[in-house]
Image (tube, one colour):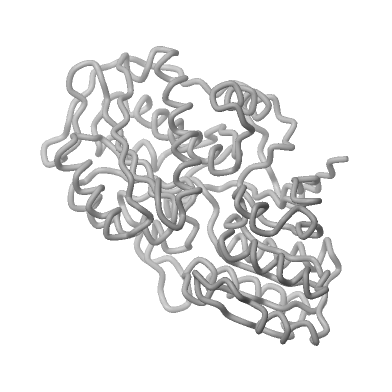
Length: 398
């Protein structure tokens, strides 16, 4: 049975996700490379379709493609059809930069969706600034994606053309520490993190500080590097420790192996993670029997009973013959979020679109209803997913 605890305000989703139009023509501002000539508005798609994080990119693009198909079938935006110009950044920052440059300077796009991961998305922001064309990620969760931070982690200067619709790593780390303490009654934790990833380091930092502020104790911290496959040394070491939970910030490619090897060694403590767990590959690597008492923060839950979410799942299943994951949903919302801003801007001009994105209020998506704050981040809720035999069994909205 699905249990839902509302620890902070979570706005309800709108049942209707299609855009309403106000009409008008497209144009391009002098000094901007984007354009909307003819009967189409071009939007760039810069995602990881191959390489280490291809699962995230491919899933995001499936969601984007579905959203744009629906929007075009409903009449498009500003009376024009949306034309996607898609490319593969191969999960590499340098490729992401090159692709972004091509899309903005050669292909005439008015905005770019993606990349999915923090490092790749950050690599495109200087190109966006130079060309004055907005870039939007559905899943780049680092705190400094859209704003510069000082040494204490406080925002200093917003990145004018960068936006994201996912919550930040600090929120995920804080959420999982609170969940460990309040929902699981944990007082002692071990952290195993990917020491080569800013994503994992940021999550670990915020989990640690929040858990300790709640009276918890971090009894051990171990690190690995992305690409490792044998974690027996780390796991043998922590097996002798006294702890209630393991916090494992990182991506599915290593997390699946760590969880499997931990269970094989008889470590049965709950494992907590973040949105990097959300991939079918986690189940493939760990096996269903290992994925019990596993919890991770996420942007979306297929268990959500909101009519808009149910409709999205039905539409996605009809299109692709499978149920959507969180990155499918984030891609879908990212495309709708951008098209909503173009409609509100009244013209397909990159500067006007950027201003409309920044002024978004109460956008209703399948990953939640959100407004964009002064740092170009969404104000939205987070969901904690519980896995039982590798499948989502509970959805806890926070």
